[in-house]
Amino acid sequence: MDVMVPCGGLRHNRTVTTHADVLTDQFGRFHDYLRVSITDRCNFRCVYCMPEEGMVWQPREEILNFEEIERLARFFVERGVRKIRLTGGEPTLRKGYLNLVEVLARIPGLNQLALTTNGTRLAQDAITLRMVGLASVNVSLDTLRQDRFLEITRRNELPGVLQGIESAQAAGLETKINVVVLPGVNEDEIIHFGEFACKHSLTVRFIEFMPFLDNGWNAERVVSSAEIRSRLCDQFELRPLASGASDVAREYAINGSEGRVAFVSSVTDSFCSGCNRLRLTADGQIKSCLFLPPSVSLRDLIREGASDEELGIAVQKCLDGKWSAHPPMRNWAQRDNLTMVQIGG
Ligand code: SAM
Ligand code: SF4
Image 1 (cartoon, rainbow, N blue to C red):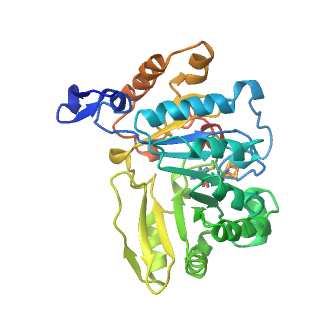
Image 2: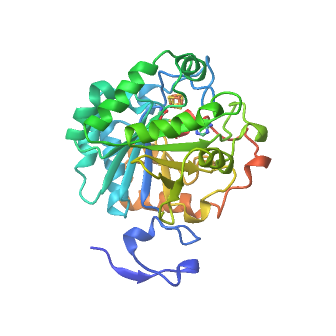
């Protein structure tokens, strides 16, 4: 049973359980949201995410198996994680992933299980996903034009993705769309995406282009959230919605519709002070920040027979190394980071 104890350092003012304390960093941020990459593979090659050729996938034995993912998920939920998002690579490519969703959704204490996907398997899997306990899905869709879809993802799958979005909504999954806005590529579709949000009564989240290894990022290629919002305001009346301290997206209702838009301003207005996220890479490394290298392999610890207490010490060490905020991205050195697909978005 957890014991209530006062904590040291900046945590003097808080009283937390010994268990939950494992997930608190030196700046008092408690981490109750875990993003789990379940594969580094993908059937797309989005230009902002990975190169067209030459990706070397990790061998199967290096990737966490489902039992290991379940053990780690239970470990984190017992310590206070309340939301888990499965991501990748493309998580729906992982064989048997529906079984994994079912197992994770049953973990007592987990309030929300979500999935981020490129949408290619949703037409087929949405109903099952809902039945086995998935609550919500974020679907990446950067253009509504077929020629452009091919240009951005290097795959010709737009109709299937649109069908997938429809199926997700019909199955009762809360459905949001992720759009990475790139200048000279899809910025002329900002209004179309606003209309898409209204027409389908869903949320479109506009994401600023972020720097990762070899993804062609430079500061001039960032269309800021402020710019995107201003263009939307020419066409729509936006009403700000209340957000929590750890919400990365600032959300707005579009007056006169059920549609919403949201802005993820990782580059121009970082949300580090309220960060509640931990990331587990497909090969079991734990990351305290998207932009910090992984600190320890929980997979290796598990395979060496580590107890939960030993895992806790490793996770705490990872959180002790978390910075208060990442440096400005305009000065970003990309060399030491991983590609987005290796991290899990
Ligand atoms: N394959 C799934 C998908 O595309 O939704 C899940 C993994 S993907 C890496 C997760 C999210 O990261 C996607 O919404 C994608 O648009 C976003 N993403 C990838 N590279 C990015 C970048 N350089 N800047 C901003 N967002 C990025
Ligand atoms: Fe694949 Fe998602 Fe990256 Fe696109 S953004 S290449 S779909 S992992």
